Image 1: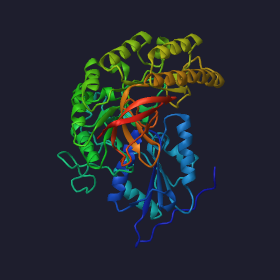
Image 2: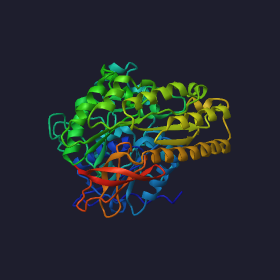
Image 3: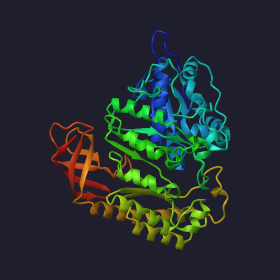
Image 4: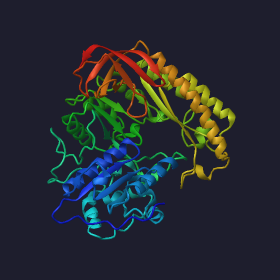
Length: 488
């Protein structure tokens, strides 16, 4: 630990206080940070990119797994110094609250999700020298009714969901729909759109529902307002995010709402791609597959959360499935869209996992021909059922198994990318700053699914253009494609 930072210095009344937002973790956190940015700007703060130029730094933390927690703490420590105020917000702060504040006195405040609606007032108070009480954690699943359809209209603070007050002069949607409480922090051609928050599933290894809460969908009109506003700002690809996208609409009394929403999102003027993330295999229904495969503008990209393939391990995880069912689902996808992009994540070393279970997983992955697979070694998470299970493996054994599966996955994803040589792809340009031109094909999601290098790209290229290309090579999960003419 570094020495405690000096007390924050309040800006002069004649100057506008500045604040920097640092976002860690997933795309859902990016949406939350942009809500905070809008509220801070409305509250009179000047947003800056560099923490060294700020009077205050808000670190939107991740509390998902141990490595993410460490990154969050390290980032908070790095932000201290020069008298600036450092505030921990986000999942780690929500999950641990006072415990984090005690362990990290370098942070000037630790605030939970309930602080988001009045974040500007709280930060102003902190800069004025007032001490802010640390967040007291609670199981957020208990804040909303047990029955999903009874959750509408709740006044529980849910980051990324709250619509604007009538006089909020930020992010006004350019077409019909409610105002948008959001201020973009990036300028790229892709932006996440939050469909829902929380989760009603009870996977034994996952703590997310306890600090993100029960599943709550955003009304379709709010999602569409976000989409129109983002498109007016130059966004060409919408990345639909939630903890469990296949449950979208169930608390609104409509389990087929996603099937109707996706075509509407794809029809928003300026939007060329709509990408959906985090599909539960057990909830992935034929009608949804049809819409994702057949709707112009909705990319055939299937982010299927398998987590394992061995039925006994999945049962201990409180999940459903086996290799035969999963392969049948993949066949259903590819029958509708032969060139679909398919990714997943798996956990290796779960309590009670045997060598035979690992072999079942490896055999499944070999047969599945997935584009990308994230491999995670199991670790206990506070408050989860899995932490109490018998049959825990030594850490060294977990690492060995994760390394073994990871090496197999590297080979398999490289083979899958090589299989795409000769395919026609449309590449969304994300960097036009010199050579080489970088972007993503339709089967490549942002950040973690590889990228495509474009050869012979037009000299007058602009970020956000879509280029018609043909794949001529691969390296790991990344592709090399040659521009063949055709741009939009």
